[in-house]
Length: 239
View 1 (cartoon, rainbow, N blue to C red):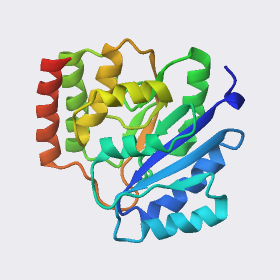
View 2 (view 1 turned 180 degrees about the horizontal axis):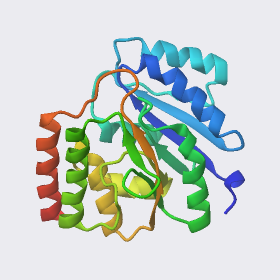
View 3 (view 1 turned 60 degrees about the horizontal axis):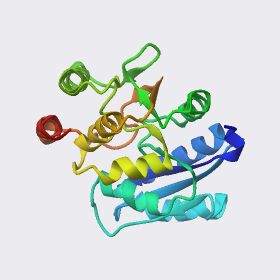
View 4 (view 1 turned 30 degrees about the horizontal axis):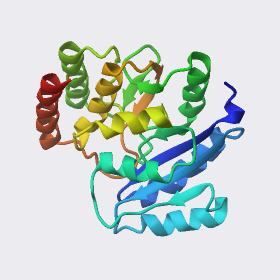
């Protein structure tokens, strides 16, 4: 399959990302010069003026390339993707964070890997040669690594980075997988990839370096780790 025949819908959920959104949009356009794509910004009622920045970007790049599809308040990551999917016109969907921890420079390698392998899902991984994490302290690295090792051991999905949220999906596959997910927040990414693996979808990985948030504070705290463990138990029981 030729990339020229594909369209990629990039769903970017935002909450208070005024400082990052213009930069990430610029970088996406910079790195995807010969690709048909649209960026769907799902903003959960950010009070910091994120939507105003996106509207300015629309005048710059065009409303057909940047779609602002806001929601009234914070309603969670999983439903943000479902909301974005409803407005996606591409046959492939990319999900990525707005906080620049996911660098758009990796997007061509996701697309290339999918074209080479025909994969249903290409997932960015921090845990293979060439991948990594910058800006995390040791505790955070161990927690993340430990979470992935724990999930690997118990769930065995054959994917090295379960909690990552930088992925390329065939649109029909994402619609299928997302419809069977029940988790919220941090566990949601893991449930998506575990269910996709259980359903027998072809998953490939590309190495990425995850950079901790450029502006703003990380949303991963103690409560998320508890949620993660509860989610892990739930997935063990149900998949």
